[in-house]
Image 1 (cartoon, rainbow, N blue to C red):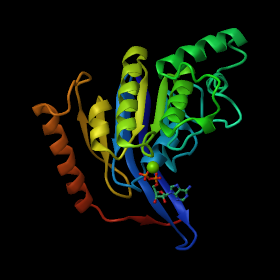
Image 2: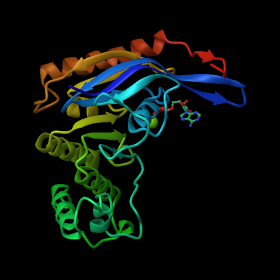
Image 3: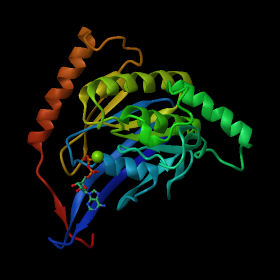
Length: 262
Ligand SMILES: Nc1ncnc2c1ncn2[C@@H]1O[C@H](COP(=O)(O)OP(=O)(O)O)[C@@H](O)[C@H]1O
Ligand SMILES: [Mg+2]
């Protein structure tokens, strides 16, 4: 069964200065299945965040429809957790409370919430920091809390928008590995936006390349879930092909505008 179905999606924003709509995404058709780890890549401004926000239910397509397990998406839902690019922790709450905060009070007792939060705090290697407030944590630790909070919700789908792009290379690699480990253990469907081909190669079971604005799907690659090193011949071939296609799609496109009323 498909988890997310994107059918004929088209998105434009009105530009007051030009008094016209600018197409951001065009003819997007994408079906994402159970336990897939899909990485969406493409140049800056091609509509990656917009696409993720529509799956999250924060934005609506202008044309076309998006379905979550055959139900049309009308807004955000707890089955689709989001990890944002910028840290989204509550500054007055400690690590433990930040993670517990995401858990449904009707569904879980305070003790259950504490137990679930502790389990995921351990998984992201923050045991011992439960009582720390966000201002005492490094950027990498803050994103670890955000990861723990999202996984603690036990969402069906995890949506991530360049979650580690503001972190240094080494921290980012650590967190990529941790996400990968948790994903292997927990078996969720993940959609991650990144502009890093290497990050996509490491994490994805499928990579979807969008063209420069207006974003359209240019090419997809299916990758093995088990890939111990990225310098194998097979992975190097994927990398070369992706980089070549990034160049090809950049040359093949011209911007499109539409009438604001459309
Ligand atoms: N709320 C909005 N109003 C107007 N334009 C927007 C809005 N959100 C995004 N855009 C425009 O849509 C285009 C795609 O943005 P975005 O989805 O953020 O791209 P990406 O994440 O690939 O860098 C950009 O040109 C951006 O300026
Ligand atoms: Mg973006």
